[in-house]
Length: 353
Image (tube, rainbow, N blue to C red; front, side, top):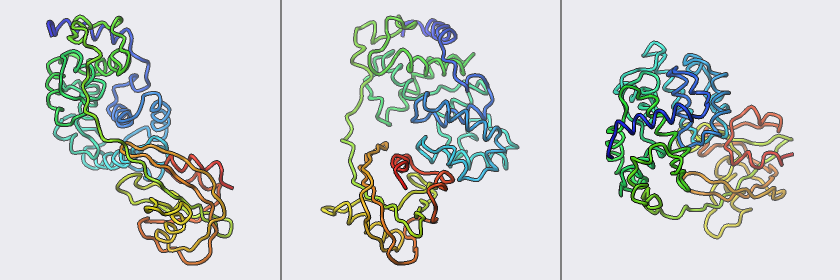
């Protein structure tokens, strides 16, 4: 880059004039910045805004969050995905209250000890709330850096993280690191987009090697990942005396702590109906029969996709003996809203009796 100081000035000037009016930009409160950055990981801004507003209203302080029941936190998070973020926020809030006198640590080595806090969240919170000179490196920033410097290292290869961090640190405005980091992320979100970047309106295009060399379409580089696997799932909504059985997933792991209807992956050459009855038996110990096929829903996770056949089932015999789940309830349809469920289950709940 020809003139880093010129880049810093132009970037901040653009940001101050064009930044989006987002709720977490109305404050420097480290608690609120922390919540917003946790939500923004892997999730689009437009999706996060209403969740953030409801979450802060429900848990306005770290003490409120630390004292809350985890199920209520997961219910507030319901539909946002990546539920380990919510569980880690709860664990970290308890640590902050118990060990740090209700105050989010301002030292990098200490804040990194909090559950769920890695390089990205720590850099964002410390730079925005405490003006610590630490560069944020997220997907948007990597894309901007790749084009500014014509970096041939793929942005989606974790072993290149150090290289992108070094370039981000070279550009960092240490006098105003919070606004600088937000400006870099905002530039990637609004101007230096993955497809059809708005180069003609970019305030820092004079400092961009890819633009100057007419190579914008060549950056960033990415490695081609394996095709996303598709799993076929059968789920059974089993009725007994007018109530439905739901089970609770283990606290750790995918969708940890959420409730769901019994089900799982089908075995090779197994019919959807047989898979449903087998899964109910294996997970709950109950014998059931298929009443009817309710619907088929599809859902995508980060590393795989699922195609789910949902069946309405009748209870035949047996007592609940859990194998995998950690708790169960027999509930009416009106009680569904009391429990946090995965988004995939919400896709068919409206069809239930």
